[in-house]
Amino acid sequence: MILKSYEIKKIKFQKNNLILFYGKNEALKDQAIKLINKNKQIFIFDEKEILENQNNFLETVTTKSLFEEEKIILIKRASDKILKIIEYVYSKDLKDINIIVNSDELEKKSRLRSFFEKEKECICVPFYPDNEQTLFKVALNFVKEKNISLSASNINFIVNRSNGDRKVLTSEL
Image (tube, rainbow, N blue to C red; front, side, top):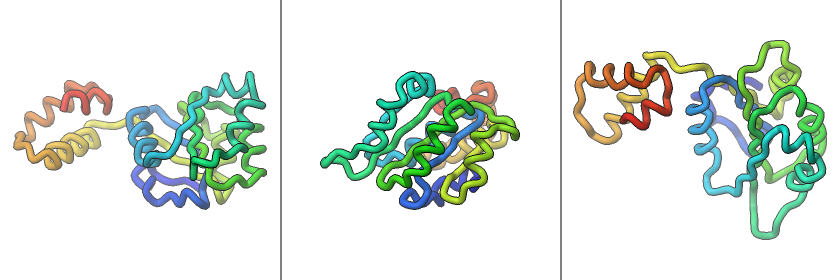
């Protein structure tokens, strides 16, 4: 199932526990992960680390502590190489665990991307680069939220200084 980046709140984590984030917009992906996290225990793995030690990863996925209700596993820098492991985890139908696969841009022919797009219980979310219009909206929302009065030209100046990077924009604000 494919969702837009602004539809992340629609994800039902009990049903959709495998999620793919792909694209160049790292700042927006970080915001989405923070939105999902909600004080759950998070385990961060790199794809290379998983491929080198699959048993350690599968043990982390399948074991459950008495003290944790749910856990999130974040896989960074994923590519098609990890697809077999993801398919194995998907076949186990694990509950109380969410796996977020974070990847750079994936081509339409990518097997990882097509797996997440075709499976009904999996979510695929593309994160496209921000343009000046979306950055202006982010800045405007920040200004309104903090109850700061700034002119549109000042907001445009801040947006232009960010050079199209949402992380730079938030630090400027």
